[in-house]
Length: 117
Length: 113
View 1 (cartoon, chains in turn brown, purple):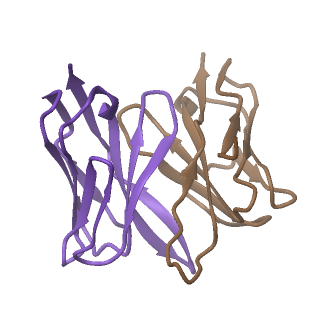
View 2: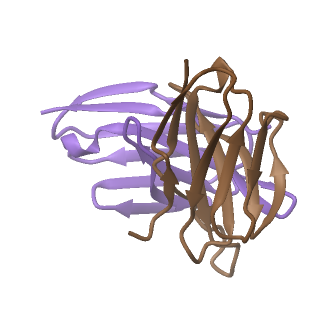
């Protein structure tokens, strides 16, 4: 399967613990995005990478959150000292860069559902 | 900031019926995505519209972007149970030379056999 892959699918942890999620984008895509989605809401933008460079972080991404894409391929999102409010679905998406074809659609993975006890 | 409002918030239709979902933007749309999401899963890309007046179809789903580029509609003809899910519209927002997507809150569709 050549789609966006996210691991783990589900994560249950106690408040205060650290968690790390992984995203493997579609191989030829140089752009990678992280979103967070809570129940009944649309996804909210968290951060964006072009290759290995992190070009924007939303104000939703507090200091407890960090994302990396060390070699411009897979990405990790880490949450330190988790809080109840961190419970959500964390979605990763990837896309090609803008080209002569105009906007390139973002393709999403199935997400990691985080539950904080 | 750009805000998207979707209507209706939820919809229950009998199998075989047609339906329309609307997405209204607070600002001019540079691009508009439609995605479908099943509960607990990721988003499936349906269509992307960029030009005012543009219309695209895929199987029994048609999406339009109005001339003023502030509203889009998604129309499903002869709905089937497989169409059930949450439909999300997303506006392309340009920031510093790249795009990110701002999503509406979604329309939940149930199709009764």
